[in-house]
Image (cartoon, rainbow, N blue to C red; front, side, top):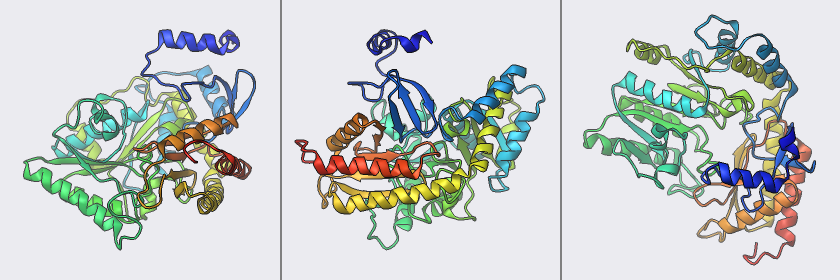
Length: 442
C-alpha cells in the first residue's frame, strides 16, 4: 500500500528510470495514476472516478467479487501445473465446449493471447505441412516474434514482410476499395484473398492458414460484410490451409447477438481453430485455443508433448469458470446487445449533427466512431481524435483511438457498462464537439 501513497510524479520518475520507453502509457504527457478499479470505473490516487470505455480485459468488470473470490479460494488450496489430474481444467474445457460448435472439441490452455496465436500457427503448419500465412492488412495478432511476422500493424515498422506472409485487403466497407455502395462487398473482398492465394501459389508457396480477428479491432473496429469469412474459408481450405479465428478481443459475448464474434457469419460457419485471451480471465493471465480432433491428432503425431507450465493451472481455470458464471447469471451478453444498441443509436444521432463523425459501426459493446476531416475523401481526423480523447479524459472518461490513421474512437468497455454510462459519454462528446473552439475546427 505504500506505493499507492507515493506521489504521482515520483512514480512517473521511477518508471522512466526503470522501464523501457517502448512500454508506453496512455496519455503520456499527463498520465493517470490508477490505484483501484470496480466495475466499469477506475480510481486515481486522489480518489477521482473515471469511466472506463476501453478495457475489454476486465470483461465482467474490474475486480468482480465472484472472480476475485474464486481465485482466492483456489489459491488457498492448490496452484500447480496441469500435469497433475485436477477437476478444474476438465470442468473448464467442458463449459467452454458448450459455447462452441461441436466440431471444436479439443482445448489447449495457455497464459496469453499471444501464446494462443503462436500455438495456432504451429498447429496449422503441422496439420497442413505448409508454411505460409494469409493475414489482413493492418492486423495485429500478438507480441511474439512469430506473431509480429504476421502482424502488418507491427512488421511494417520493423523488418518488413517475410516471404511466407501474404497480406489481403482489410474488408472495410467505409474506407476500403469496396465500400457500402458496392453490390457485393463480401464477394469482392473474398476474391482479393483468392487472388493473394493464387499469387503465392504461382511462386511455389503453400498456404498453412488464414488468420483474422473475427472483428478486426486494431485495424479500426471493422465489421466485415456478411458472408465474407465463409467465402474466405472456402478459398483457404481449397488451398489446403486452415481458418484461424482470433477471438481474443471480441469473444465471450461482447458482440451481444452471439457468444463468439465468428458466429455472426451464421451457424454453418465453423473455423478450424479459435483463439481466446484477454477477457477470458477478467485480467488474470489465462488463454485458450480450441480446435478439431483432426488438427489435434496431427499435432500429437509428432510425439512431442505440449506442456505449458502455468497454462491450465487450477487457479486460472477457477477464474475462467467464474467469468463464465458471471456472464450467465448477470446476463451480460443480452446486456451488451441492449446497451450497445442504445449507444450506437445515440452516436448515430451525433453523426447527423457533427460532420466530423463519418461513420458509426459496431455490434454489442464493440463500437467504432470514424472521425474524418472531409466527407468526400474521408481523410482521417487524427489530430482531432487525439484532442477529443484528451478532452474526454479531462471529463473523467477514458477512451482511446485505433486504426491506421489513429482516428477511430473505440468503445470496448467492461460488459457491465450501463445505459446511463452510454448516455453520459455521448452527452460529453456532444458538448465537446458543439462548444469547443479547437484550432483544427473540430
